[in-house]
Image (tube, rainbow, N blue to C red; front, side, top):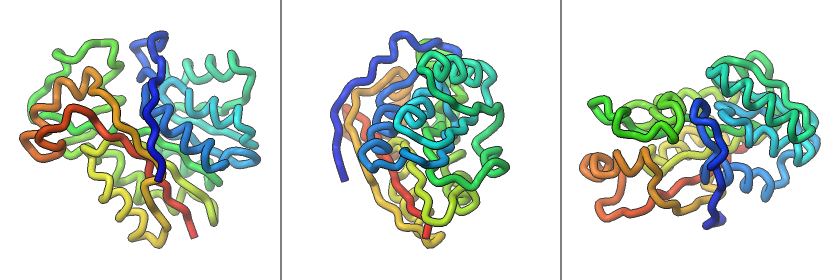
Length: 230
């Protein structure tokens, strides 16, 4: 397990697309530290701004395929790849569409993972945080995480690796267990403590009350879970 304490500048990200933040950078760092990209067929799920897909291509991946349900995210990812001088095949569609194009040697995912309040609080969150569909993930934060973990064997080539980043609020051990229950080796590969962003600032009091965040927590722990297929 490694720990990182870095900042990721996202001030130039368009608000129509999830701005790349610390979770995106932690996912990139974990991929680079593990040396997974060179020569690999890589899928980037819920690509958003495309920063992870572009990083995989720049790191020497043989082919990178990115997916997002948002047409602006698709456009943004294509633009970022062109600006970086790398090739990324971008498709509009949910992460589940990746099954049609797999299996892959490496699957990277930064899915929505923030638990949602019982009442709509989106008006209280600044628009700079990006579209709510990029982070809202049901009452326990696992609306996408659970089916994504279940689909790992369909997405991965034999001996392939999946890296998924999410918050401590969405039950890290449940992700690890979900992968292990399918015969995969799984562990927390990287973690980082970060200040609350606009979404977490709004929801932290509720998350503390319902036990999804430590009672005295003033920071959020994000993790990258690594799962290796047999």
